[in-house]
Amino acid sequence: MNIQWYPGHMTKTRRQMEEDVKFVDMVAEVVDARIPVSSRNPDIDSMVGDRSRMMIFNRADQADPEQTARWLAHFRNRGYAVLETDAKTGRGVNQFSAVVKAALKEKMEAWKAKGQVGRLVRVMVVGVPNVGKSTLINKIARKRSAKAGDRPGITRGKQWVRVDSGLELLDTPGILWPKFEDETTGLHLAFTGAVKDEVMDSEALASALMELLRDRYPQALTARYKMDVGPEIPGWELLERAARKRGMLISGGEVDTQRMSKVLLDEFRGGKLGRFTLERLKELPGGDERHVGV
Image 1 (tube, one colour):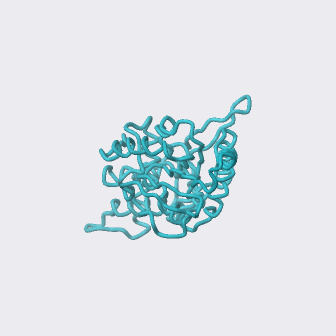
Image 2 (image 1 turned 90 degrees about the vertical axis):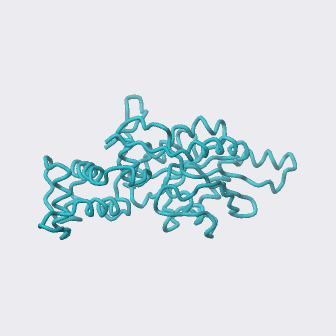
Image 3 (image 1 turned 45 degrees about the vertical axis):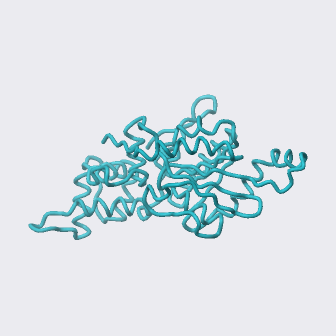
């Protein structure tokens, strides 16, 4: 599947972000902890210049905790401030202000030395669509001020949100980049809901997800759908088996694979199938690491 989705408003959003970044002290990039590479927009690095950086691993409750710990260490070693969160429950968000202020300690001390006491710290929050930015901001600010939803494209304009007397956040619309580097990136983003379902074949996407889970997490499929999962069974057949197990039949006794596709994607995105990290770090000679998709 060659998945690409870059609506026209994203070009406008990028230009606006390039202007707004001049007025912030830090850029906090929210990524999906299950796909910490595919959910990073490569354009962000060139956009933010020399601003301080934070990586927020959201939806960590749905990812493999051991793998998340490795990713956090990976980015911390590269000079990023890091934070692990679950925006829906609020786990980890109370540490946000402390992590920001620790990362900007020297800058804030320099402001104080210049007599700029009480100067606001401004943080731009960025990320791909549907990664949980607005929900996260609402939890941090303890109020519902940023528009949030469970599908991409909810936040359309910039929104400043005051956290406390010393910290202000800029919520930005989720943006992708014009062309995904490879098919795996597009699939990972589609699996997690960063790409609108309407622009793709849901049954083909669900079949691809079935094959990924068949190869890497077969026990999750067996436990959830009470079916045998063999290594050679194609994804479309697994989709049919799951639909039969759930009693999703249409006229003539045929299985409703379209309905089952929606159920599979919803349950994967909602964490009902288990905790998975689709991208992991592989140690290389010399102690360096690179990511590998799984």
